[in-house]
View 1 (tube, rainbow, N blue to C red):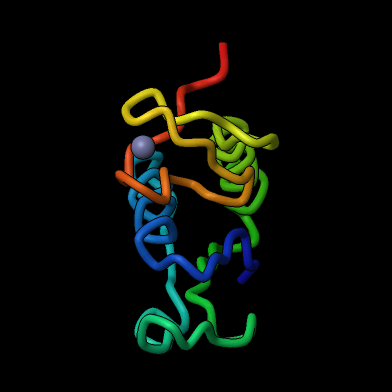
View 2: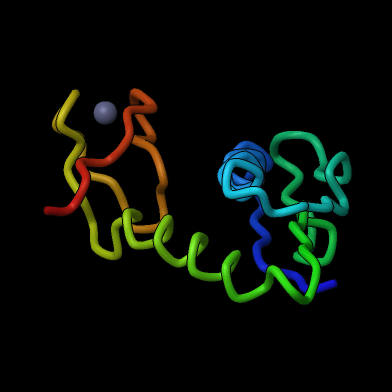
Length: 103
Ligand SMILES: [Zn+2]
């Protein structure tokens, strides 16, 4: 088995899992329920993880890379509320809107 994705945000990990399964890749999750309560950001070794078989590793990595292409690398301005967000935020900190997709 190979680890192809991990993130402290279990919702993101869940959507990656769904994408991989859509591509007929068999996925195994570890630490799915390990993340601590809000405000208690856990160490990286207890983030939820997505594992796939060695055979599916290449395909899975391509899918994950494509997904991460859509996440902003620079500070971005929310289209919904005009708040500026740090590049690390996957959604607007104020209104939870998604960032504009890069052209
Ligand atoms: Zn916003």
